[in-house]
Image (cartoon, rainbow, N blue to C red; front, side, top):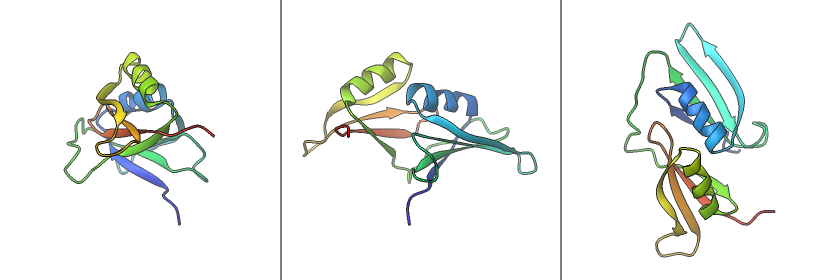
Amino acid sequence: MRILHTMLRVGDLERSLKFYTEVLKMKLLRKRDFPEGKFTLAFVGYGDEASSAVIELTYNWGIQKYEPGTGYGHIAIAVEDAYQSCSEIRQLGGNVTREAGPMKGGTVVIAFVEDPDGYKIELIQRPGP
């Protein structure tokens, strides 16, 4: 078994796609409209769906805003340099909500950013391969 995807409902699909592809540098893997159900699904990620977990962005036609909810935590993304990533994300118009630094009570460097719908994304500094 493995994680396939995390699903997020978004209020403006194009705005969200721009954030995930341009600010977080993911690739749009596939996108499909479902006219009968009045929704669109877009899958974004850093790798092929066959071997990587991805994010499913769900846009329900005509709904422009969702509350992130109290049960949602965050998506975690590994980065080589959390400090540099925060700088780049900010330059690209992203919202850094917790600057890079060691996590409370630990040594792992983390940061948090927020997507256009208010969902939290944790950046975890991990050395490259």
